[in-house]
Amino acid sequence: MKSKVYFTKEITPEKVVEMYHALGKELPGKVAVKVHSGEKGNQNFLHPEFWKPMVEEVHGTIVECNTAYGDASGGVRDHTESHLKLLEEHGWNKYFDVDLMDAQGPDVVWSIPNGKVLKENKVGKNIENYDSMLVLAHFKGHPMGGYGGALKQLSIGCASRAGKALIHSAGKTEDRFETWNQHADSIAFPEAMADAASSVVNHFKDNILYINVMKNLSVDCDCCAVAEDPCMKDIGILASDDPVAIDQACIDLVINSKDPGKEHFMERVNSRNGIHTIEAAADLGIGSRKYELIEL
Image 1 (cartoon, rainbow, N blue to C red):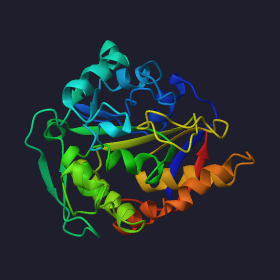
Image 2 (image 1 turned 180 degrees about the vertical axis):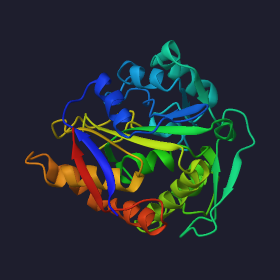
Image 3 (image 1 turned 180 degrees about the horizontal axis):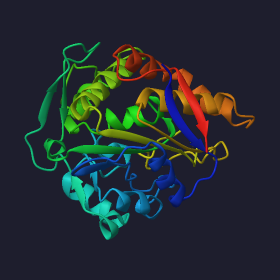
């Protein structure tokens, strides 16, 4: 059976809410809203004003975790104090309750018994305070994963600093200073991402939904302090209850686009074996690559 993925070419805050309602499911209880809050200096991330109507609709709390990369990258989100300061500078606290889930340890360790690479995932302990999750992903490229969408938000996005190190090193180390010397290859890294994503999906079960916004389509992630400008025109908004299907649909929309910038975008995806994350996640059973695209 094909998963349903809803799609609109219109990109507005109000349309995000409309796409959420198209899914026909209300998220229960206390809702964690996973966003990418943007690295210091990044020009492409989606600002809190864009997400405001959607977060208010579910009475959600913005959730984030610290990063694993060091000061050499130009980023400031690897330390709780500077990360919290940046969240405030970017305006997230102005509109929402914000929870840096791994600000105070110890991390929660979730088992991944059927993991391809990882046998456990380390996530910010506050994730267990929530009944459901809304994953709001800015779909774009990524320097290491090829692309960033729903699966990246579930995996690297929800992992603590130690958890991110484990994913990037394919389980070899949780020391962020050793991670980059032991970065996984183009098969193990996508599979580690899929493993970590599966643990979050299995935790929330049916109480998790996904919205991907294909806007500011740079080959670089919002985690880059110095990111390349978008290489494609905006495409639209997608919504689904299937993280595999929604990411696959985004990739297909890029491939089938007539935008000449798609060659540059897909070179980034393919050179990092990014689609293998989707393949591995489907193999783990957390979604399907077969979908029905329903345009609204």
